[in-house]
Image (tube, rainbow, N blue to C red; front, side):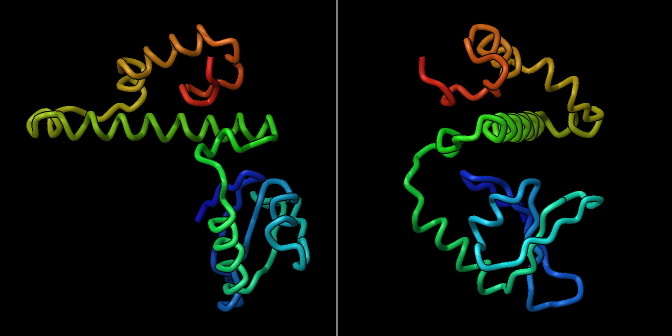
Length: 156
């Protein structure tokens, strides 16, 4: 499970050898230290997630409940203070937005077209009106390097 907080993203999976524990992993350590200040930080330089913590499942649930109970923002990306993390989250937002658009377009096609047409996401993505509009918004934005295609990231 991927969880994006205002401080960072974590990947949570069941511990392979200790079923009562969860392995909480991150790309940077601060989010783990914020969520689980009492736990030992493990550094795994050759793993896909460099930073990890072995956390009891009940503590993971409590930390996630705490995040939800204390949430004050009405726009997630605008709650992110770290510029690089904001840029990364904007890219994730954009990829998932295009996934949504592609799936909606496929569902709107007649059944015969769906069967006969090979799904080519890149071609559909580049030819979509939404992508052309997004490219226009990015080109006209003063924040082109971190705009991410989301019209609510910045108010003009």
